[in-house]
Image 1 (cartoon, rainbow, N blue to C red):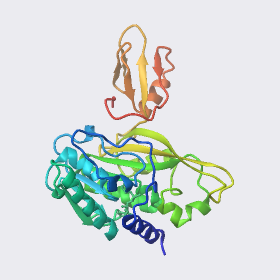
Image 2: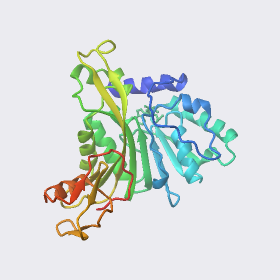
Image 3: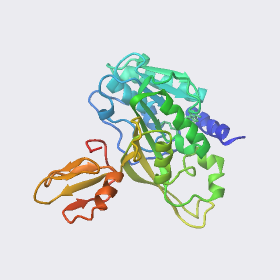
Image 4: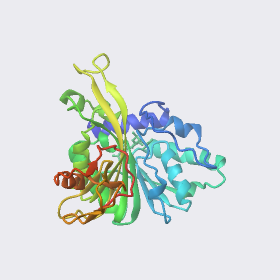
Amino acid sequence: MSYLETTKDVYKKAAENPDVGLCCTTTPIWQLPELDIPNIMLEMNYGCGSTVNPRDLVNSPKILYVGVGGGMELLQFAYFSRQKGGVVGIDVVDEMLTASKNNFKEAEEKNDWFKSDFVELKKGDALSLPVENESIDVAAQNCLFNIFTKEDLQLALKEMYRVLKPHGRLVLSDPTCETEMPENLKADEKLRALCLSGALSLDEYIKMITDAGFGTVEIRAKRPYRILSPNHYDTDKNIFIESVEVCAIKDPVLPDGPCVFTGKTAVYYGDEAFYDDNAGHTLMQQMPLAICDKTAKALESLNREDIYISESTFFYDGGGCC
Ligand SMILES: C[S@@+](CC[C@H](N)C(=O)[O-])C[C@H]1O[C@@H](n2cnc3c(N)ncnc32)[C@H](O)[C@@H]1O
C-alpha cells in the first residue's frame, strides 16, 4: 500500500468512529454569537490549529477547504460567508464526505442561520483539485499537507496556487519540527498519516510555500504540539513537534524575494522620522512597524543605534509594511 492509500484508510476509520485526540491542539475553538458546534464535529476535530480568521473573510469570499474531516472549520467559515455554495469542501475519502454531510445536517438543526447548502461537498484529491483556475478567494487546509512527501506537497501547493484568484489567500495549519525527522519515522506510513512524522522545519515549510509562487507569507501562530519520545516511538531522543498557522498570499514575488512576516517589529527612537532610501520605508519616532524578515535584515545591516528590531514572535496577521 502507498502512504496515500494508508492515509485514506486511517481517515476512513476516523470517519466511521470518531477518534478524539487523533490530532490535538491548544488552539481554542471559536466561540461566536449563535454558533453552536455539534459535539460530533468537536470529536472529529482532526486539525492542529485554526485556519479561520475573520480578517480573511471580508466581502463574501468564495472559500475552498481541502480535507474536510468532521466539517467543523467549514461550519465556522460558513458562519462568515452565509451563502449557498460559499464554502466548497473537498475530500478524497467517501466515508469522510458522508460523515461531514451528516454533521452539517445536525449543525442545521442547532443553528438557525445555517443551511447545509452553504457548504458544497465534492469528492476530490488535494493533488489534483476539481476546481477551476483562479476561482477561489480563500483556500484552507488543516493538518493534511504535512502528511505529504515533499514531492506531493509541491503538487498540493501548486494546486492551491492555481485555483486562487490573484491576491487570494491560502491558510494552512500543520505540524513543524526543528529536529531532522529520522528516516525510519518518516517512512512509517501510519505515523505520517497521523500527522506525526511528515513535519518539515518551519524554514523548509515556508520555502516550499514561497517556491510555489506565494509572494507574502504570514506566520500567525506557533505552538507546542507533540513529543515523539523513545518510550513510545522508535527514536533514541525526544523529538519536539510544534504546530503552526500560516497565511500565504498570492501576491507577486518581489525582485528581491518574498515577504515573510514572522512577527518582527521595528521601533525607531531617533530624533526625526527616518526614511530608508533603499527599501522605501518611513520609520516614525516611537511608532512600532511590523516588518518582514527581509526588511528586518536590511534595517539591521544599517547598524544604526536608534532602530530596535524585535525577535520573531510568530504571531502576525497583518498591518505591516511592504
Ligand atoms: C488530519 S485530517 C484533518 C481534517 C480537518 N481538516 C480538520 O481540521 O479536522 C485530514 C483530512 O484530509 C482528508 N484527506 C486525506 N488525504 C487526502 C487527499 N489526498 N486529498 C484530499 N483530502 C484528503 C482526510 O480524509 C481527512 O478528512
